[in-house]
Image (cartoon, rainbow, N blue to C red; front, side, top):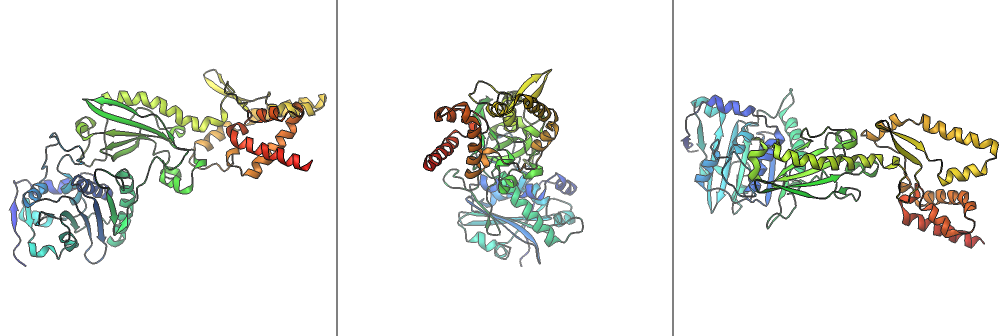
Length: 500
């Protein structure tokens, strides 16, 4: 093999390069940073390849526009871009540090090969060479050596694109774990991370093509934190405000209660334990998720607000206001944006709480007779059974006068001893409640419940079926599904007619 080409960059202390490895990247955030570069280069297909055996490596291959030799050398420089300069609206980079700092936070040898207009160039940062030479030495890779590198042949088969190769993975294994096991575990974590961070870009039609991402040829599927495939997810009105003439779009969602979620959906929402931690703002920059699971100190994380998710879209032209860090893993909103978000939060939080408090709402002028009444008492709330509920009145009429007091005592005992504190904890916890509601009952059970109540209430209305049906449709729990109640009642009436 011929002698490697060498290019000296401006002299800086090599110790600084070693220190920059501790900037705070995790394996998955480092991978995500490289995916940003591929997307900014208009790549349609991005392939992550890795091998934990023999000579372990991680490679990211894309079919983006690639770089010519001069552009590649510039890209390998630290701080190659001014974060204040104007960029393409779809550019996901900022500092010109991500390629180097992200990669070298995980490995000691970084090789980048790029192909553009039939020109192929390759350069390598090798920290061992930097340490040996005591200077920042960028090493060139001869053209005849490129095909011998992992997936070098794959890049050569593309019309244009870039291959980033990590070798000497000294930061992957920790706590005494073998490198092969550690790398596979890191890749699994990266898959979950990328599924969420790029969920709006994966498979979407951004421009003329979608972004296809795979790991060892297995597609990375998008992970939707808002569960938009569930009909019970609430879409609140979109709001937009302008900062420095740039639009910030806020889209709130309220997730369904746990009782309406399947196991897969619970996992997508963060799992039973992580559901509470996942509430809050989801900050996107050019549809790339930057940070999530925080209310930015504008409100507290509560059990009863854990279903709230607020999508906030910011353009890259406002990076300087959001205090976006190099890793693109945190963004602190400026005061001008906080004021707008705080106003929106108050409305969103109330909707999240309402998902839990639905069954305890007070009787009001909504045409529905509720079994529980809610009233305000000394700055708090009190709940009592509705003694005027038609079923309670019907039962009372069947009792002799000397027994009606027992019914009153029973109702009083139930509302006095009802475990409201325990109910609050259970409903607000991440454990699913297994009690089925009327909406979840099968048709037979629903019809049986309706028939029993109709028999009790029928003496109040005689043969007036329409009046009885109207009453049933106004009573909880049947008032929650008017159409189902009408159908079930019609079946009951038809069965009664056939018997006669």
